[in-house]
Length: 216
Ligand code: AMP
Image (tube, rainbow, N blue to C red; front, side, top):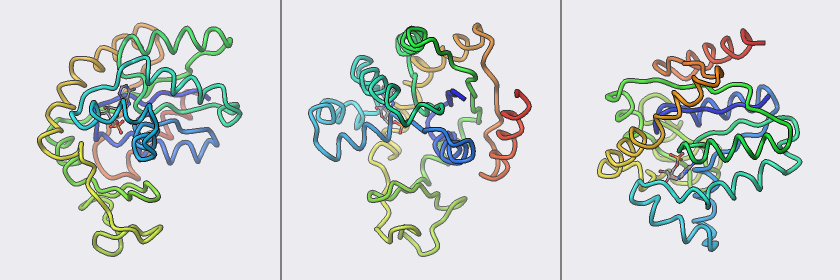
């Protein structure tokens, strides 16, 4: 199974991607996570990406495409994969199509997560993450058992610097201008399915599992 999760930042793609990757034993590739890891490790790629990410802008296509292609040829993706946060531009989507074509593969489905903008802003504003094990929480909908502390590894939770109000607006504008055209791109290919991203995590997961199993 080869899937893409598409949608604005904060819509819940990452949370659902973890659940679905586990359920179907496929590899989750989140370009946001990969880039943050490179920034933390201060690799040359991370140093290049850092400023773009802090401003809420997209990292240049060639940097991200290189990162994804490297992962897609690795054994962990043999069973299939789920792309979370990639592609984000039409150039990335075209590059992905030709890369997969070269391997005789295609994307099976693109799930487009939809959510009203007011809910998106609430979700991003309340998001907290663990800098250590990368678990993601929400102050209201997925609170940690102990205030500010990761349930899994006990580290102090943080707010991602690009989740702060001043950066959220530019990320949403970038989504509108550069990523939203991908909805039509994949609609034209006949593989886009829209999912209502509202409500609690378990509810969205149930709708998503129903959608994926319905499609065979
Ligand atoms: P995310 O965790 O998916 O919200 O991504 C966080 C940040 O990483 C984005 O705001 C971008 O700066 C960068 N990023 C993640 N995925 C991509 C991508 N496919 N293309 C360009 N930049 C990306």
